[in-house]
Image (tube, rainbow, N blue to C red; front, side, top):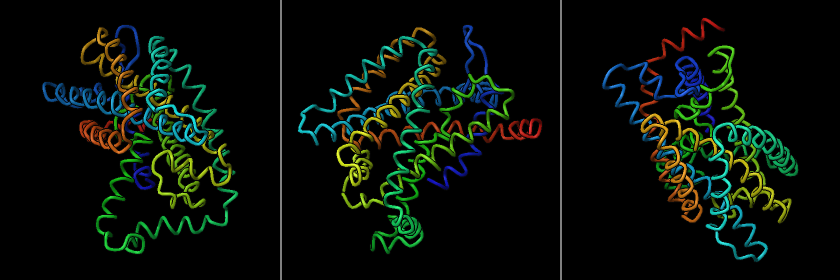
Length: 349
C-alpha cells in the first residue's frame, strides 16, 4: 500500500490536472473526467470505444460493486455491535435503512450530495484519527515490533508463512496494491470527476490538492488502522475486514470500541457511497443521457441492499475485478497525455 500510494500521488496529479484541463459544460453543468480526456487523447472511433469502455467499467466498479463493498462493511460492523449486545438484527436490515437514506440524498442532486459529504468527512476523519492515536499510544511499546512485522513479512516472508512464501509474496503485492488503489483511487479514473468540478486557480494547483488527498488517505488514515491492529495483537483474533479493526479497538475500549469503529465506518463508507454514485452517474449520463439518471440511482440503491447481505470475500473479489478493468483505459489516456501534464506542471509551478 505504501509503494502504490507513493507512485499513485504522481498518477492522481495527472488525473486531476487533466480533469481540469479538459472539463466541459453539459446542459449548463460543469463536468469532466476520463471519458473527456480520453476523447481528447484519441480522436475518432478508438477514442469513442475507449471512453465508452471506461464509462461502463466505472459504473460496474464503483456505482454497483464498489458500493456493495461499502454497504457490506457497514452491515458487518453493526452486526458485530448487535451480536455483542445480543440483538438479532440481520445485516440486510442495515442495508435497507442505508438505502433509504441514500435515496433521499440521490434525489436531492449533486448540491445536496456535496453539502452532506463536505460536512461528514472532515469531522469523522478527525474523530477517527484521535481515537486511533489514543489506542496506539496505549500500546506504544509494541510499535517497534509492528514495524518489524511489516518489513519481515515483505522481505523475509518464509519467517511468517513458511512453505507458502512464494505465494505469500505474490498475494501481498496483489492485495497491497488492490487495497491501496481501492482506498485512494489513484489511477482508477474515479476522482477526476470531482476534481473537474472544483473551482481551482489552475489545473496544477488542483493536481497538488489531489496528491495531498492520497497522502492523507493512505499514509495517515490507513496507517492508523494498520498500527491499531498490529500494536494491539488483534491480528491473532482470526477476524477479517471491519471486524478485525473492531477487535483492535476492543482490546482497550471494550464494547465502546465496537461502536466507535462502526460509527466511524458508517460515515466514511456512507460518504463514499454518495461520491461513487456521483462518479457513476456522470458516466451513465455520458452514455445514455439525462433520462438514465433515475434508473441508475435506483439500481445503486438495490446494490447497496444486496451488498449488505453478501459474504465479504465475494463482494471484494467482484470489486477488485472491475477496479482493474477501469484502470486500463484510464492509464492508456494518462500515458498518451503525459506531455500535456508536463507542460501544465512547468507552466504553473
